[in-house]
Amino acid sequence: MNSSLSINPKKVLHIVLNPFTHDSRVLKEANSLSKAGYRVKVLAVQNERGNLPAYETQSGFEVQRIHLVTKKLPKLKPFQFIKYIEYILQALIVLKNFNPCIVHCHDLDPLPIGIFSRKLVVYDTHEFQRGRNNLKNKYEALITGSIESLLAKHVDAVITINQEIANMLSEVLGRKTFFLFNADSKEQYSPNKSFESNYISLREKLSLPGHKKIIVYAGGLTYGRGLTKLLESVAYLADEIVIVLIGYGDLECSLKRTVRKRGLSDRVFILPPVSHNEVSHYIASSDLGLMPTENTSLSYKLGLGNKFFHYISAGIPLAVSNQPVKRALVEKYGLGIIIDPEDSKGMAKEINSFLSNIELQRKCRENVKKALTELNWEREEKKLISLYSELINKQ
Image (cartoon, rainbow, N blue to C red; front, top):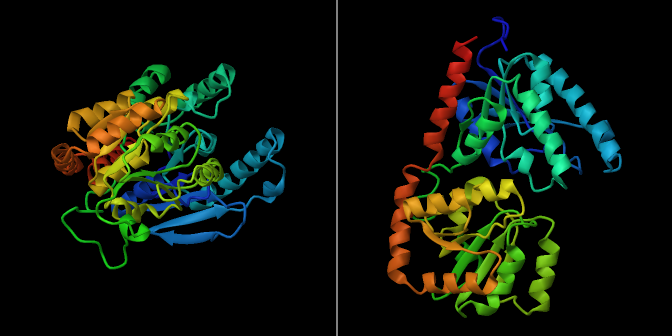
């Protein structure tokens, strides 16, 4: 897809179908491109309350949120489709006025906008779309895959989140697929540096004494994350171990009820999320970062998750599910332990063993520091900027 030479080669439009409040991947990409000299705008959608700024500037780039007239329609599929059509139409108007050289579409839903734009198009899929957790059956997966394959023929580059999914997409789409880890900045937190005055550690937040061991989960409180089994594991965990869940989601109320009913308020703490640039500072006083992801979908099985890199940036060891991408990285760098999220007793046994082994913990922390020299955003952003340069030079 060729663009007109009259288009400003430094303008980039990133499109998301969310309010753009917690999307760390988009934020990092937009910030990196802005620093590299591009004029970047992120086009998002206004939230349910309608209380987010319609226009704002973040980290050197613009954000514009579309207000949908159809937003108040019921959340039934026919009405959702009407909202989607309105978003596409409004987005095309913004696109025409902004006149970018590159349209960067995040996930599948915004991709038709990029195709209609007749600009250079980057398709950035944050998960394996045809294996998403919210697809109800094989029929929906087939339709999603067919749409993705059709649209991907008309884009100029495909990006995803790790090598495993990139390999699968290269095969099903019949084209080269790049990957960018959603890694954190290596400058974001240094275990050798004390907290800045405006940061508070998790241990300080909860007033936990030094002998208490903190195992932390920082992410969505949703189905398929192993959180129900994690709470069951408390019965088998050593008395000095506490669990901290940081986030929000569909399971939040249910998890809080479970904590109350089982009298776990002194063992399990559920806290609201913090901003992306504070996470690693916040959790750095923890002893172990948890990723008990279940195999509820192919996307979950092959994914990596933002929290994987939050834990590395925080300098803490990891406990991850026995899933190919997670296990491969943990074993390659010696970052921690492998757990079975379906076995609450077995999971507790692995955690107890790890947290009682001071030498193993010390070694894993050293390995996490070393891994951060490779698994960091500074390295990934170079790949992104290089890809953009190649696209523009091929016009």
